[in-house]
Length: 374
Image (tube, rainbow, N blue to C red; front, side):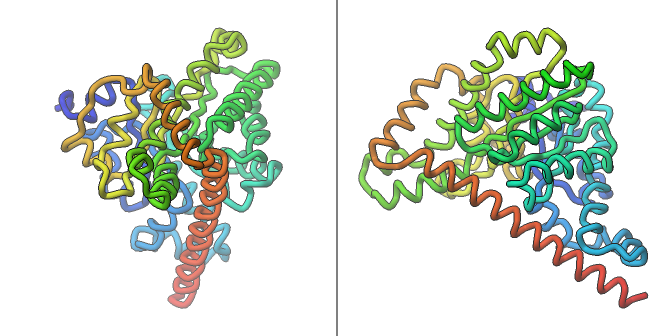
């Protein structure tokens, strides 16, 4: 029986697409991914190097493929691409019916370009096109970091009809640049005669990491005014990102493309697992409910929302003045918005690079072990 009363059902009804921020071979073959689709309103999946590093370190489900790759003489980097694109393609197949049912809006699985090309426009374009071809599913999304160098890559990939999930967005200005890059890509696609309706994009705006960094600075200040702002920056920033989205897609430029069949670049709330135990574990779900967005959640956050989430309708529009006041108060305390968001982008890429190297190391050891057996 379809669940229509849980907080996750209410979230879906409010226009928020529930995506799972996790994927593994075990989750696929055990039927757990299908269970989450059936019972938890999951309509998409996001992946990143950290997720795959964790999945591979658990091992067992990948043994057969690793043995074949070892026998074929693949190196670790080649094996990682084969393993991850296999999981993503299989995930896309599981979501295919949902993809058709939602006319391509949901039923999506994202795969990220290697972190090493985050500051390499040509490298990002090349790898984005390769991953698109290897997965070979219409409902895959290629994740591209929102670095300065990534912006041109977003335009180029969109221009050739590839659906892009733009990741690691922390600042409002970068969000504006990401939307501009998407619209530029659509304009080029239209000029090339590509059907705009088949191109989708999401802009992954990170939430909890903003609070983690800002709250550390507020704690160092230590005044009552500073402590009163703890846990407010991430939500305020995300709400203003939605205002940026609304304004950008109300422009004449965007309206012309939408009239030609293009789709909105929906905001996606990423990093929505609560990291501070003092905060409610569903904070970044409940306070960011609004139509036309995605919330990609770790399973722990998803289960918490299912069990005791409190969905009160739209908690974003109408809160823009309040959100601006939060950022103004932080600035008055000497906390630089630009400094925080620049640092978070840099750290985000560094963290994924570490995870990518762990992934390569895990696969290398697995390949060696498989070769020794043979």
